[in-house]
Structures are given as structure tokens and as C-alpha cells.
Image (cartoon, rainbow, N blue to C red; front, side):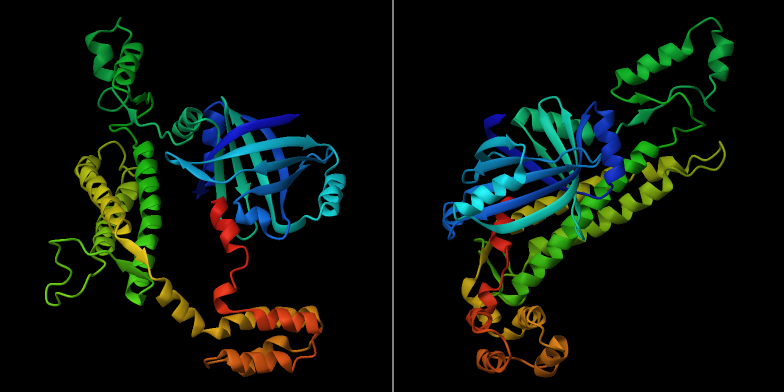
Amino acid sequence: MTAVREELELKARVDDPEALRQAIVGAGAALVYRGAMMDRRFDRRGRLEERDEVVRLRVYHPSDRSAEWGVLGWKGPVRRKGEYRAREEWESRVDDPKATLVVLRRLGYKIVLRIDRAVEQYRLGEATLRLEWFPAMDVLLEVEGAPEEIERAIAAIEHVPIKGKMNGAVGNYNAHAVAYPKFDWQRFCRRFVEGLGLDFNPYTTQIEPHDSLAELFDAYARANTVLLDLDRDLWGYVSLGYFRQRPKKGEVGSSTMPHKVNPIDFENSEGNIGIANALLRHLADKLPVSRWQRDLSDSTALRNAGIALGHTLLAYSSCLRGLGKLEADPHRLAQDLDANWEVLTEAVQQVMRRHGVPEAYDKLKALSRGKRLDRKTLAAFIRRLPLPAEAKQRLLALTPAAYTGFAATLAKSV
């Protein structure tokens, strides 16, 4: 099977994989694969990376121990298409992945990135949804398909039903049945509630239990916490000088120091998240709890739902405004990297271990603990090590700025 298409995808972190799995299945998705998925990306002298192209062999190992198979693919440069990452993609199934690997190596391609994870892949309409469990990382959801299919799939899996009741004071239609005993109250009340766009809950006490609202408010709070982490990190990076903020005409940067451009947007966002999450967490904890059938304290609490969501909206708006002002300061970043050669001690000790040099950690600890290393001191240490010449040359060529592993490739795959 050979396929050519334009790949559109969205990715998101998953906090509760089991709940998401249930939502995916509940939306009508069909499980098409469960097992291990191993990606091997190839390059030849860095030429593909220069062109932002990808050659990948993806190998599937089904959990039922049936025969493995692979998919060999090429991807073109990434471009944006609205909210989506888009790139041209050609793929072909291969029944013998090991033979394909040998062919690629004979052609001069080398593996530059390995990504292994357990996956569950579903089909929902024309969209593909894949849950991915990475070792020691967050669980991710990837959705691929045409824009309208992606939107339809996301809408289905993120739908949190809001329920309503219309079954009398204590949920049993007591007064309804006495006033009009022959009327079909259950059918009428269901149609009325569903006509309001709500899910009908036929089993309640004096109040609707609010489990769905609690779930929704908790989901908002979790999303807000992610934004809070971003706000604090960006505030710190601005303070360190890694980012500059473009000044806005007429804006007051500081009440007493006119030259300053404070990160006020991220501060405003953080403050609004604090208020929003305090209310959202309280609502999520409070609403499912009721004293027998006489507790109406939910009504007081629910009056604050709009306030919580209003502060949430302000938080996102402030953060977006702040992001629009940021400019990276390459000189400041390079300066900080060049002042911290000790970060390379990680690489040095790993190469020492590879070649059997004893007490690698302790030797680097004696050299660097609580100290600032410069290039000259670290180079002298490396030259004294009983390592092969090739290994020494690789270590001596390292710099803090170049010690980034697969960061560039991984960033492009997000």
C-alpha cells in the first residue's frame, strides 16, 4: 500500500488517559491498533535536516504478538496551515522492516533519532487518533486528518455533557403524579431538558448532582495550571534577559522607573489564574457533595462560576498579549552558555563510562562541584583521560551552545 497525502496534525498532552480512552470510544471511534511503535529517522550527512525533510521507518509490534510490519515514509518541510502543522507525506507499507533498514544503511543513511512508545490507534470518521505512552514522559494524543475531521474528532472527545433535571423537589415526580396522574411526565421532562441543549438526568435528589460541572471546572483548572507554569517560566526568562519585551507606546512599564519594561502581562495572567483556580477547584470539590436532600448550598457556589471563567479568559488574554511582545536576545543566551562549561560534565562522564574509565562521576565531581569551569580547565581534564583519540576529539569539540542533542529535531516534530 502506497499513500500520498498532505499531513495535518495536532498534538496535546493527556492528563487522564483512561478518561480520554473512554471518551474516544464513546464518540464511536474504532480501535485499529494496540502495541509498540518504534520510529527510526534517517539522514545522510545532515542534508535532510537542512531541507527540513524527514525519512522515517516506523515499525509496529502488535500487543497480540502477531507479525510485525513497517511503514517507510518521507515528509516534506513543515509549514503552517491555520492552526495546524502541514507537510507533504509519502508512505509505503513494508512487510520486512529489517530488510528495509539494511537497504537504507547501504544507501548511506544513518539513524539520527530513535523514538519508541506504546500506542493505541483509533479511527473516528476520516480522522486518526493515537494515544502515545513514552518512557518517563507525558502521555500524548495525536490527531491527524483533514481540518474538518480533526475539529470533529476533538469536539467529540472533549465533550463534557452538562446535565439537567426536571423531576420535582426530591427527584420522584411526586407532585407531578398527583396533579396529572395520567400524563407521561418522564417523557415530557426528558424532551424539555434535552430541548435546552442539556443531557437529561432522570436520577436526582433535590438537586442535580453536578458531577458533569465538577468535571468541567476541574478540566479548566488543569489547563490553567499549564498556563501558570508558562507564565512563571517566561517571567523568569525576561528577568534573566533571555527575552526582551518590545515597548508599547503609551504603556507604563514601571510606576517609578520610566526606563523599565516589566513583564506585566505574565504577572497579570498569573494573578488571574490564581483567582480563577481557587474558585474552580472549590467548585469542583463542592458541587458533587450534598447533605441528604436538603442541601441547597450549591446555588451560592454556582453564582461564582462566571467569575471563575472570566478570570480564566483574562489570564489567557494577558499571556497572549505578553507573548506578542517577546523577542529573544541571542547575545545574552550565548553569553550565559559560554559562562557555564560545567554543563558538559554530563557528556564527559558518559563517554568515560563507555570506555571503562573508573569513577567517572567522582572525578568530575572533584573537578566541578561548587565551581565555575572554563573551556581551558575542562579541555586539560579531557586531554589527561585514558580515552581513544577520536573520543577525546569529540569531547574537545563540544561547546555548551552546541550541546543540544536532538533538540532541534524534536522541536520541529511538536
